[in-house]
Length: 268
Image (cartoon, rainbow, N blue to C red; front, side):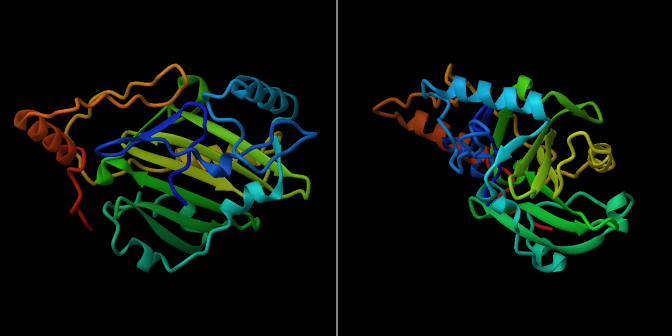
């Protein structure tokens, strides 16, 4: 699936190179009349700002964004046993025993790797009302990745932390509402198979997110990372490499690369 990010306001960096993962599941429609299953224009395209303005206007008018059904397919996960999914994780998943999740029926879990490190976990639950909620977490300290998001793209709050709520609905009536936020070096997504705009389920979704305890990072003493530099197009700018490296420069480069992956061999 890949860690999920929207074109606007998102950048993700790996240990040696800067990496942008434009989340395909946020390939939203540009207008109600001309919905698209594609990502839409990239941030450096001339029509990007206009497309974003149309999206924002639709959300202001309806409280959600209309998409085609294909845009919601990425939320259909194939579940495996929870025990098997967490067995080789590089970090401990956030504890749910003291949260409302413990009262839900578990439908399974699945793990994903970044650079061969199992640093991502999905867990699915069925609520008593019949809705399915999915909790996704990515411990970036385990694989050395980095991410940033524009403050304007995080207008909501979860326990004081900036967050984003996205509500998507297809003409078929199928809908998904998704919260996303950061807690230190851990990135979270929590989504439900319903349109929570103008619905009491909105408060329930935020309450579930707020009930999560603090996570234990895979690398609590992770080395400080150099700041990410974002260009005028909203994409990360990779520092220019000299054509010829001295031995000292090469050593510094390799040390920095290794330092960005401090928990490569961490395991439960």
